[in-house]
Amino acid sequence: MTCKAVFLDRDGTVNEEVGYLSKPEDLKLIPGAASAIVKLSQAGFKLVIVTNQSGAARGYFSEEDIAAVNDKLVETLDKEGASLDAIYYCPHLDCDSKVK
Image 1 (tube, rainbow, N blue to C red):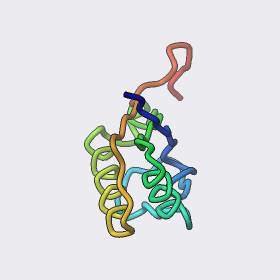
Image 2: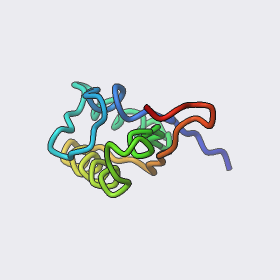
Image 3: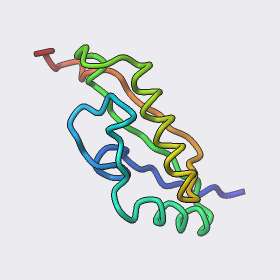
Image 4: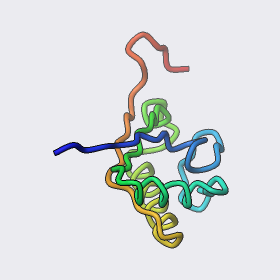
């Protein structure tokens, strides 16, 4: 059995880039993103969001805030008839980076 998947970044790809997105009410889909997700799903792709959320490591927001934004993303996409198979995030900084 073959499984096809598309991995999408969250911020700036599916939703509008607003800096360190930490509040569900600030989430806005990029026009056409939901319909593109629907088309990919209809073409047989599994759809996975992968997103770097280093703002958690910087103390700008918590992992609970990440979960709340992701929940809002799923809810918003659902209203547009689109769905994701998974969302994965990394709440860390690069090991060589310095927190500023």
